[in-house]
Length: 283
Image (cartoon, rainbow, N blue to C red):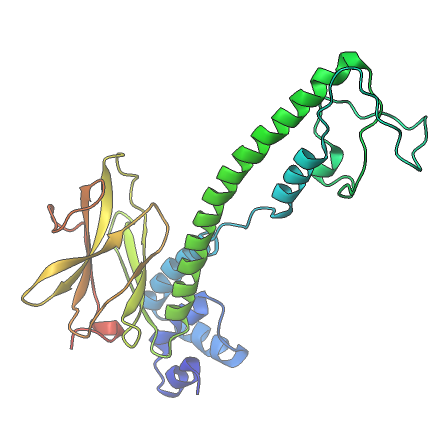
């Protein structure tokens, strides 16, 4: 039986706040929870927090770059001629003498996807005075290709990281024992955690906090009885943080403001602390 079915069977309507916020309830469960929601302030507040976090989760994964762009740039480099002055190649078969000539200082149109990729297309006849432009075009194409290769690598690394985080988030949310807990102070500053004791992980988000100076960061800590706090990572703005290595003895999560790069141990009092007993920890 699914986690939703077990929660519903136990009559634990409070536990349906997370799937309700994620629009994961069936019609009957949704109607029943909405009836419960009209008389439960705690669930109303939790659904509001989780809905805000769901929006941030949806925007946390970057869209992939256009992979065909690099191939088009490299094809342009290979197809652009570099000829010495006075050289006049023969016209390619099947091309009309009246066909318009491409402006030699522009990249070929197929780079931008407006023409098919060239095969063995020869360059149009050009006068010697325009020969330098062919060299400039090839050089420009090489620069564009080099810059794109660097940008592509950096973008791909970021995309791989975002996709890995998205998979981790999905694993936690789909765990059979996934539960949600949240808290918010009078200033509207809040913390939300969707945790799975069986996975030993939690998806944690902060909301309502002012942006810190460039030399400061929010750092998440795992709190356990008679054990020093253990760092679970650094927050990057509103991006969710996937905390790993949570054991059954964990009692709470705490957030402190630390120097850029984080600290081995907290150097300031927590700005917020969230108990974990309600999500299956603290045993």
